[in-house]
Length: 367
Ligand code: MG
Image (cartoon, rainbow, N blue to C red; front, side):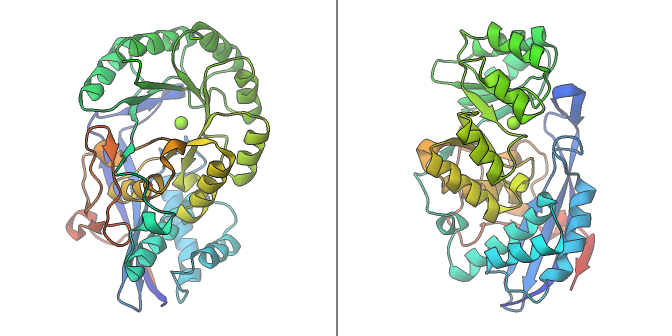
């Protein structure tokens, strides 16, 4: 089987809540997502998606994803999409770095592999654990009482895990954590994600002030070393995200006992092939994971669902259903949240069929 053509689409994904705000005054109103369709000489087409969280979250931006795909695609024409490790090697020797640009292409090839073998991608990634898996809800940064109200609303919809966007003024963040925890039951899980937004002195004030609160602290500061320093001064459970983007960082974090949970985002590692490798390393080391991506719509939510559902349940801290945050549905068969839980499709591949009329015109094609 050979890749014959790669079509690339751009799609805008507005938010139901209108805006999503996190540390440092950063926000996004409309996500700019990129969808790829990889065609083969066997008549099978696979789909992938990449959607950065705006241009200032990770070193990734939407136009950069498309530029990277334009650079990579010619090297993939004529290659076998089902030989995924080899295909990733071709991408890595064609373009150094830029993992997010490779993510949608790798994802689409997993979709093809699933379709030609008649298997849902989660089976190929290791197997399906349980009937479904647990989600978190991200709570955009607002005034403490507004965030507490939103948490109460999403709790009523069935969510049991919440990730507060903090990383602003320390006193207000302390208020946010207390206001939200007061709305939750002891069985609910609360994460305060500073998204690198605190300097060390701010982070120290926050972790001291919430030492008696049942809350996880996520990525308090910009660098790994700063986070490690805070980690060594708090007994709250600790999550690393932005500063862990490679196998080397996972191994260093584990050796330093720098985290209890780590966030595996598919595009941060460069696609499902490499995210699976990271997932399996974490599983071997006994490190629990949040499995997700930076953002996305129906295809990314499907890809997340397959990686999360194929992760041993006790090691899956939580996951995400991004397609419930955005107003545009662009694929049939995408997983839909039931309460605070999600399940991967049982159909072959990712289990999604994009809607041509919603995707619109091809942005560019390579053949
Ligand atoms: Mg995070």
